[in-house]
Image (cartoon, rainbow, N blue to C red):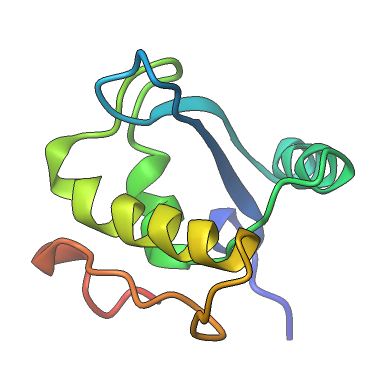
Length: 108
């Protein structure tokens, strides 16, 4: 049985992080068709797509072109560190363990 409403829609958030940035920025976000397009474009560009319902739910609350809030620094840093190890052929777990803020626990 399919869920109706927003919960059944796929969601996606794209982050960018450059040397001049104080923190990663939300550069794209959306649900449904837009989320599918964000994911497809990332994959076409060779960008890793990580699935974390909890992290995406929190990142969807951040306005476009805004830096992520300090509460998400640790989770995003863990994801970026895991990706770095993966891309450089270093040993990495099959999936990263992300430390989310306490109020996000249990959503995923």
